[in-house]
Image (tube, rainbow, N blue to C red; front, side, top):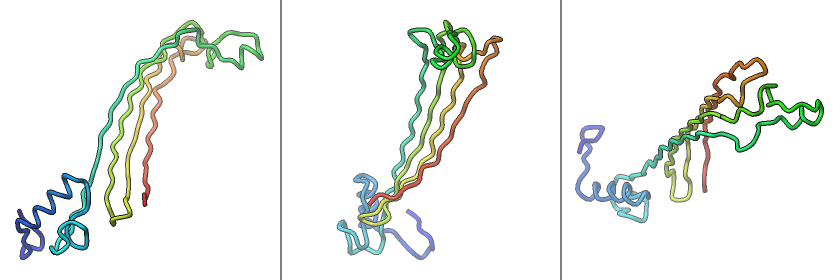
Amino acid sequence: MAAWPPDLTIDDTDMTAARWAFDKKEMAGHLTGTLPQIDWQFRPIVTSLRVAGVLAWTSSDNVDPYRQRAESRSVNYRGGDPTRRDLGLELDAAIRGHWLLTDWLTFQAGLEGGLLFPGHAFDDDHGTAMGDVGLARIRLGLVF
């Protein structure tokens, strides 16, 4: 095990605290409840990666309720054929992490994103397909 600056060393007791922090996802070492006598303090960084996909279609006609009521026309919301039921494919992904700042304060951060590849249920009245739609979001927070 190496440390910086190079004159610092991590001994077996320090490594025990590091393993505890990693395994238990809790702070360990200096000024904590686990091995408080050592000079080092270890704070775990916990992350998770999530990926999902959804293939969707409607079980009935895809009708714009406003146009049906106001114009007495059964069309999708872009004016296209309401009998086309393929809504498309959506792919989502997220990575999140949290870092213990103190024994009572945690910083959370994450990045989430989604991409929709629209199906024919979103075609307009000329049969032109709707373009792909994407969204990204950054999440930051403090939990105490």
